[in-house]
Image (cartoon, rainbow, N blue to C red; front, side, top):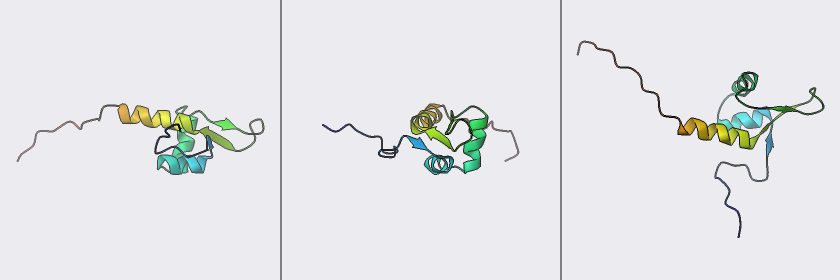
Amino acid sequence: MPVPVPHHAPIGRRWLTVNESAVYMSVHPRTIRKKIAAGVFPAYRLNRGKGAIRLDVRDLDAHLERVNAAPARTQPTTGGAA
C-alpha cells in the first residue's frame, strides 16, 4: 500500500535550494535568507561552509504547520465617528 504524501511535498525531494525554498513557501528568496539569518529556518552549507545553501523541506513544512496553527491576529478597533 503506498504511503500518502502531503499535497505540498515535492515528490522525491528532501533538500531545496534557497530559490526552490522561496517558490515552495511563496516568498522572495531574500525572505528565506533573512529567516535563515534569524534562525527561523535551519540551513546547511555544502562543501564545509563555502558551498551552496540547502534547506530541508521537512523544516519548511514544520514552519508552515506552526504558522497555520497559530491563532489569527486581530486588529484593535478604534472608536471613531460613524
